[in-house]
Length: 336
Length: 281
Image (cartoon, rainbow over all chains, first blue to last red):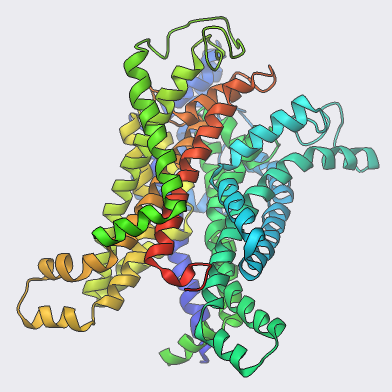
């Protein structure tokens, strides 16, 4: 078996265990709510209902879904079995809609917002950071504190300020939603334009904050590499600057890729809240609604989905990284 | 020690951060002494603009926003500190244990640490907060600390395991010093600056976590924090009402506090880690 296959298997094994732990946390924590969660919840859901028959129906339905009468391990078995078939239970707040249906409708919005925003922010941030480290001088003196300041503003704060300035005061962009509310989603130029207009502000606010964090990291890595011995040596050998810069940035870039992998978790958390500010119809807004209504199945559906996505993203990056980074390749060899 | 303090004072970044932070702390200590009013009492009509008797106007319930802001900053800083201390203690303990003990224990704990780095801590934070019905600000701080230790643990482990085989540590071992003594006197002093910097970052991220979780409506009860002020502004649609004073000052305060903490951290980093100074030494 070659080194990479072993690396791959080892990583896959660890990620499977991590996945299991994430599932257990997601299963166990909401069940720690004091008392019988079903009666607490069913009484909240059925508050508006007067017909005792339908109250009983709601109660029985949730009893069956939670399976609280069975031992915990059996409950976990049921939970896993349902999960595999894609059944995440029924929403309390939007009874009787299925959690999986709600999430299915929200995912495209979130992906279309966050994936481009995080990638664009990451690329611009890295370029700026590298240039700041290389050029030094005024550019660095201005960019670095600015990036640091943007980075210390929480995602949602920047979002709220942009919402106020650009959407409410200047009225350049719409305030909330994913498209004009009088429209029905369909394939037409009008609708696409409306979606784009609503997309701009949340997109920009995520991009800006991502730029800040990435620029700081890249600047630091580049300065570290620029001060290292091999750079001095290459310069003494008379190798052209542009070539040295290429070595430096290749070396500085690799930790930034891991950085991307590791910070995806925080980024996703942060930009979810950004969705809430703009009432963007993605996972974040549903999570906010679910928390306000104590809609436990929807909450755990959202958290599960986010955890799974982050795990998958990290796994993919680590697997690719194993091919790209010579240092990891070397450590694979050593183990043999 | 005296030497490092002298260098720190000459670092503009460190001083800038430290002075800003001290000003903030002074504000939240002094204002409640002068103005003894209850920040939750109603003083005016809803969403009154700044001016008149109220420095920062009033919120949706007609409460004095300046006073709320002061108490909010106090809660946020306290939550950040407690969360930072808690996360640093757990991270330090696990990191030292892993790095110094090595072997099987190290493998297990490192694996656990790596798992909790990958599972988004924000999600665990939401799940725990949802399942606990009455959250005090102390409890929220502890939960944040409980979910944010892995970064410190990983860094401390890496440093400790590289120190473990140094000559001075071996010498102490041969001299028959006990393990706790070796850790305290031969290992800790070498990673102390690093731990302090990690602690500062943990405080900053604790403040951000509290703000995020409070924005979601999962913050502490019966108190005011910067995140809670933002949550109120959002829930009661202050942006729509044009009441910028209900959320901009709170948002700005969070940014200023975390910014000054980052500045302190960067200033210290450049001193303890000369390799990353941008001017070549």
